[in-house]
Image (cartoon, rainbow, N blue to C red):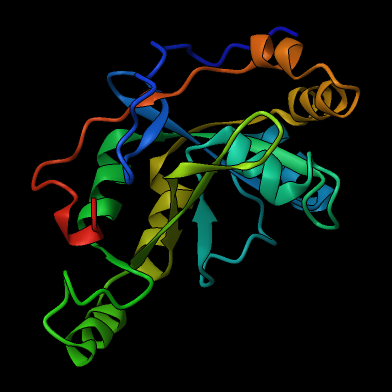
Length: 209
């Protein structure tokens, strides 16, 4: 299956517990979302999110294609039948990371629960670290980033940071078919390789990485 998504170097097998891995170029990073056909097909066709995409609601983006495959059930779950690869400006993605807070309280990072709750109210982005997935969608011992965008971040994501939107549903479904038929090694050959994403200025310590 042909795709024009960029490919990068394979990450080292000794992966840190919390680390961002993604397809990226010098200027962009690719993240994934899954939608109903009404939203997903329109976004892929027009290269921007349609009017029915709610800019005032939180939206979650994932740099890991396999995590998106897991979340959408290989693009088969209701309202997740279309998987999009959204290419963003790195400056926007980095801005969101700098202005994000963990979605859960962590006493190693936050002075106390009240301080964390104040951060939740003032920041436009949230971060969750969920178990990364292997080709069979089984959990791995390290984590994958989920970045939730709301308010200013959600609006800027849709209207300023997005460079391209592509429908990668055929790839996702082909991968799923291969895995279900006992051919995960063949599916692995079609995978787009995600490498370590450079930390933005200031690092990711406030996000537990």
